[in-house]
Length: 333
Image (cartoon, rainbow, N blue to C red):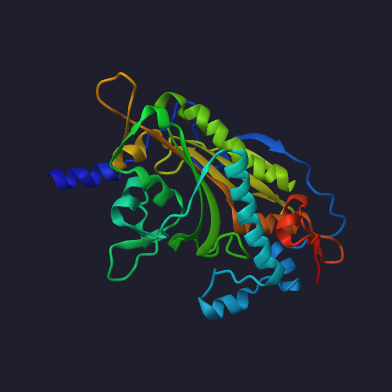
């Protein structure tokens, strides 16, 4: 029957682009490039949760009293650093990169979640409002991509570039015990998102531009990072191609994901019915949608604390953030 067929079709992922390397899982993701020098820390680097606790800028014990495990509670310079980063990221993306700022709803309906590919497959990872068919957003990608659902756009307005700050809410049912210390894998976190609507023939050029815009933030903050291409086995459900940016975390001596930049081609546009009309052409075509984190804010705080830690327990504020921090130069114990 038609309904059963619809369910099967809704469970089919996007088709990987021909340039996506084949592989089984994250161990097969090739590193494209590494940027920046690792900091020369002449003592045993502390993890960000220890640094933050000693500086009294976050308190996970009190957060767990208020809400439970895996929620953040920032104080003082920590709260200010998070806010400074949100403002800095939005300012760079709007003034330098030409994105239009959006402040969308943080709760969306089932159709919006289905359009971007979170539903039906990932319902267990979402926070659903009891008694309502509404969901807390797991990323600004969902409300921002759905701005143009059921619309026919003029070719002239493409590409459309939006940036949005939102909190993000994820139950991530299957990830208990995995990277759950500190600010890395929280049920609630802040993120600045970049979303593009493009013509099909330019979408892969736009993916490279999107990636460079996310990288710019890390370059301004002087944080070392690497870019990887996700192989076919690690690619997300809706994406045709994805680059991950991973920031260096000295305490564990690993690179951690801080941004994911993807081209969904027409996968989301087909579900959301987002089309454009070419000049002098009959009929309409599906747009291509892209998005990327520019960046995940809590993870950026974590990276600053670890990379900029000093022997006396203090943390140096990145130069570009000082004006956002009331001229504060160092967070001291």
